[in-house]
View 1 (spheres, rainbow, N blue to C red):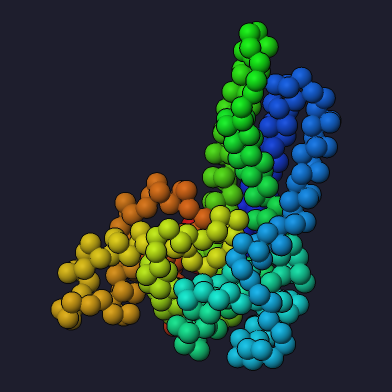
View 2 (cartoon, rainbow, N blue to C red; view 1 turned 90 degrees about the vertical axis):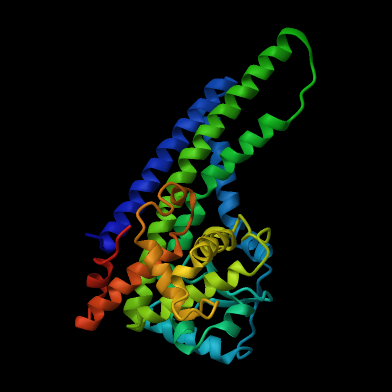
Length: 347
């Protein structure tokens, strides 16, 4: 049975495991290079702190976010202000990305310093209730401090990835015994970095998927309209699937988005392969209602994305919609408290 306590336990557990991996990584690097462990620890700590401090600027730059001036998009600003007040958090800074695809994301190191940004495509595609639901989802991320956790935890795989690239592709001069010894050190560090990268990435992606489910549940509770988020996720997935496959979300910000381009392509491809099954009126086109029903039906297929899902930062849209449908059924029976809503989360 899930709850806010479950979310906190998962966060602390993942953080503890990552710190353990990080400690073993430092010890391994120190032993391979014959360097003092304290020196290596301080060096890595400096790198971590620097990355965490500059990460908001990296996300802003990589996503091409432009901060909005007060009153520039009143519709957007009023909704976020109302939802932030209901959540009991400071009003986040608002951003806009000139991009026709429907998407939204938040980033920042603290609740007070958070930025909520949307693509222009999202403002053009969603109706009023759907916009409320998506913004409530993003506010849920800020309230649960997801950005802070994910920014901090993502440092380790980035350092490990740097270790793999640096020592796998760097060219070293020298011949004879020294060259052989250097190559052995390079391969040892590359192997250790690869192992650390794999396990730390898997832990972070799992935590990211869990936090997406909780943000969905928060949106359902605060709006009392889980159907609106289901509808919005359907439109977002469909809209993202229309963009070129190569236009994937920037790696440095992928975990912060509500939707992912490549995942949307994969999910829509699966539905279109069964088009005849889901085209209920036989008009040759899968409309919004048919698409939403198709996604809910695909989520019931146990084999769907069982292994591939382990490598994703977000749960499949199919599963998110199915979870929201279950919440909608429970809400129709009577109003659920926030804790009761979180207890319905399954991951």
